[in-house]
Length: 369
Image 1 (cartoon, rainbow, N blue to C red):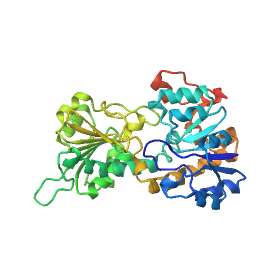
Image 2 (cartoon, rainbow, N blue to C red; image 1 turned 120 degrees about the vertical axis):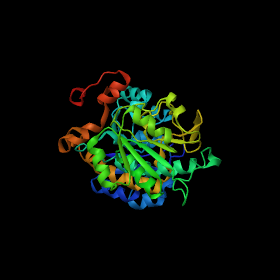
Image 3 (tube, rainbow, N blue to C red; image 1 turned 90 degrees about the vertical axis):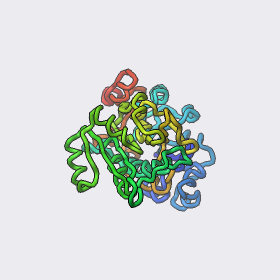
Image 4 (cartoon, rainbow, N blue to C red; image 1 turned 180 degrees about the vertical axis):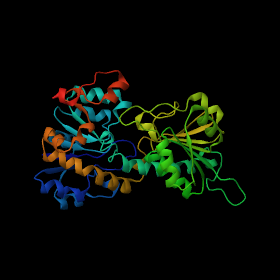
């Protein structure tokens, strides 16, 4: 198989889908690796490192797309890349289709096999999403702390406070990987922290994990409204795997909040869990609605590409080799978890959550073959 990796073209996206140290894993299995020139530069990997590992450097992205049987990326293709997608291509990347109907239709119409990192489920866990959720959760607090500063439009609050002055208050909506890592960082900065969730078992786990240093609350609309009214920073960390995120905080709820408080929506890739969310980039990361600063960057981990790329590729390599070493059917037989990652196949939509998001027809993979 020819495995290709192109340079990410999303604004301020510096990660890369395949690193030099993993090239040899493909070569040892009898595959060839095509890398667009400078694809890894943003993460600190030179063309020379890829060549030394045995990859072929290709000057034009279009040639990588044309020659490859499987493209390994980080982010979903942008519109300028749609014409480069060919029938039968395996696209292995983050797709977040429930928030992108146009890309969904393009993948179907072009008969691309779209395998999404974020929907590969292994015994109820999402191992290919987890490393980026860890990064994004930790970054969410760094960004909240920065945009709480007055020059950036915030209230002028120091999250950790100082002796004799109240600490900043961080409310985290969602107690999964993102929320847990956000809490770790917020505690480390000295903030007061509350996590809201509707899973009582998870709340019990969080109580034990943080040894009572974090307040945990069962989330209801009334509780959510009460807590955001006191918050200096609100972190949106709600995930329904593969599905569009629910809008838990409405536009009208912003009037309850302190002017200059900061909302960070880590769920923006899945449509966001704030009604007022719309995707931003690292070039222009924030906007204000009713006096509330919104940070909604859709590729937060791209800000720390060296750390993020290594964490991501360490997680994605296993399934990439499984796919490349076998036909798709055989790969699924060897590891049924792969089936949950297949979002589009042979012109069909094979993820029921994406289908529900757009009221489209869902076709199980076995019926799409």
